[in-house]
Structures are given as C-alpha cells and as structure tokens.
Amino acid sequence: MEGTDPVNKKLAAALSGGAVLVLALSGCSSDDGNEKLDGWAKQVCDAVQPQAKKIEAANAAIQKQTSDSSTPAEVQKTDAQAFQDMSDAYKAIGAAVDKAGPPDVENGEKKQQDAVKELNGISSSYAGLKKQVDELDTKDQAKFAEGLKGIATELDKLSQSGNDALKTLEEGEVGQAMSRQESCQNVNASPSAAQG
Image (cartoon, rainbow, N blue to C red):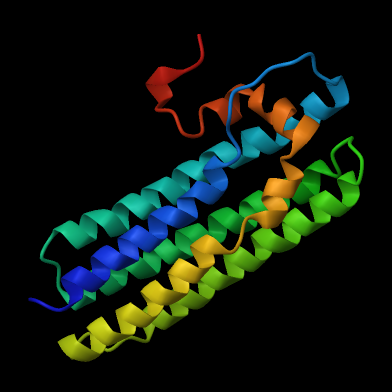
C-alpha cells in the first residue's frame, strides 16, 4: 500500500495551511466600538462560524484518511468530499461578506468586493481540485499517487495565495470589531471554551 501515503500526508499538510485563511478572522483585542461596524462584524462572524467548522472537519477528514492505510478509492472519496465541502464553505463565506455590505470604514466597499472576489475564487479552486480528484485513476497505484502529488502542489499554492484581500478587509477597525464578536472568537476555540 506504499505510494499514496506520503503524498496524502503532503496533501494534509497543504490543506491545513488553507484552514488558516478562515481562522484569520478571529483574534482578541478590544476597544470601544462603532455600533454600525459591530453590527456588520456580528453578521459576518455569525455566518463564518459554521463554515469554519465545516472547513476544519474537511481538513480533519483528509488528515484521518492519511493516517490509515486507505485504498486509493477511499482516499479519492474522502478528498473529493472534503474539497466539495471547502468549496461550499468559502462560497458561503463570500456570500455572507457580500450580503453584509461594505463595512463602515474608509475604502470599505473596495475591501468588501475584493474579499468576496477572493473567497469566490478560492471556492472555485477547491471545486477544480474536487474535479481533479474525481478523475484520478484509483486502479493504478502509481498513477494515483502521481495525480495526488499534482493536487497537493496546487493545494499548496492555494493555501499560500488566497487571503490578501481578506487580510486587507480585516485590518484596523474591521478586525477590532470582528474580534469583539463571540462567534469570531470561537472560530478556533472548541465550543466548550466559550468566552466567559
């Protein structure tokens, strides 16, 4: 069963880089807020939280599959589902940011539009990866491993690119407003570690 395992580990490592993107949404700082901006942040954070969980679950599924001695068919099924979930999650986050409208800050509209465009782009990239995984030949171990290697490389690029517009959206006041929202603070905490 040698062959896909190291490649799949590479896939899992590349994937965990992508999860950072959504988790960039959380942080803890506080100052006295701007009500309008806080309302915007709450709307976005509340929408992001379930999607962030979905992305984490997809990452976990791929990582779990790498630790088992899974068959190429199992790996294909898990990875395809994980990429689909990630594609859906990023699309939903993009829709949430779009629906929230521009944040009440300087250049808010441009920042919001850039972030939505980026999130939709990431969603499309994951959909593309799912399609690639679906087309891999699971009957030929060597070909399958080779195909996975290509996907891991794409994934690596995806996790490194990607979040500039989101970072820009979350700079300054927007980031502070988001960090005051419980749903953003809990994105990378376990549910039991709720703010108290």
